[in-house]
Amino acid sequence: MSATPTRRMVAVMVLVPVVVALALWAFAWPSARIAPRDVPVGVAGPAAAATELEHRFEQREGAFDVHRYDDGAAARAAIEDRVVYGAVVVTPEGPQLLTASAGSPAVAQLLHEAVAGGAPAGAAVPVTDVVPTPSGDPRGGGLAASVLPIALAGVAAGAAVTVLRLRGTRAVTVLAGSAVLVGVTAVTLTHSWLGVLTGDWWTEAGALSLTAFAISATVAGFGALLDTRGVALGALLMVLIGNPFAGAATAPELLPEPAGAIGQWLPPGAGASVLRSVAYFDGSGAGAGLLTLSLWAALGLTAVLLGTARATRPAVTTEARHGSAPAPVA
Image (cartoon, rainbow, N blue to C red):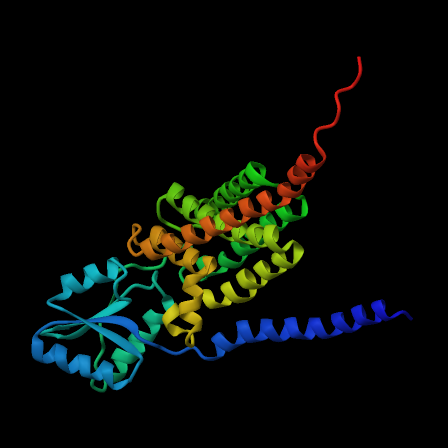
């Protein structure tokens, strides 16, 4: 047996366990370390009572980031604007909990347990779900489940552009067209059929299209610069890192550091945040995610165009060096 096939066999045998280890680390580590880390919550009511509640939250060091509000209306507005996940409002009848299960069912449950655990024995804490999950997705799993298919679609489009050697405007047209079709198809299924999303139909389609476009442009950009190795790198970044670090099933603040922050810097996490904003919160809190997606899309397209220029330059240089071919004799 020659040395080259032997080296390839050894490389495959080593590479597969490495990829499996990476996948297990990326998916299992965040799930096994779910805990509150600077989760934004609100406290409202009379100064003395609100201060006492704030101290209770702060006793769980590093778990909550407490925001003070004058009254329940201000706290409710902060929840609807995605400034906080929930709030405790002190009333003459006792504390009342405001949550937003559409923002994160996991955080809503966590807040209920934290507030109920601090209440006097036998005392019930009224809970108002300010922004509830839709009836078609009461547990909030549908939106989280949509992140991976969008990431896979983006990777597939970027890989196709690389494998088919599409350059310049053709590459951009394919990336943009496929992203639009992916967004429309995804919203048709999740909004029109399943009832998972409840916002403006076209805004949701735009959010999903931009997410797919940012991912596909990034993968195609890597492919334009590094060929198939770039496609593999882009796929690993978007699927094995971006998807589990997105925090779509829980919340970025529940993931171990720095996974939650990294996830929001990558298109899958940013796209999930934007989609949640436009689907349930009338677009509130979507700004950072839109900026992240736009930057990835712009960088990806720049890399695609740079790869196109690099691929065409040798042909132009060769033609200039040898001169134009002589005109045929009539």
